[in-house]
Length: 79
Image (cartoon, rainbow, N blue to C red; front, top):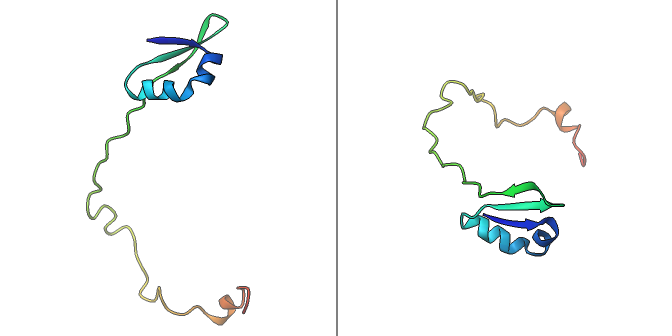
């Protein structure tokens, strides 16, 4: 595990991120006291979405693509 001062970490941030990605933990020290730790975050596992998850829960009206009434259209700019 690597320990650096906060000031050193500011200067070497790119290198520290590369080290963390490679699996190394980094401790940041301020005034001789450990104040933070940089650790790699593993991405969440991608799970396929099951087909039909919302079947029966969503209803699309038969006229969903019908023209809007004039009183609604009048509320839009440029009309």
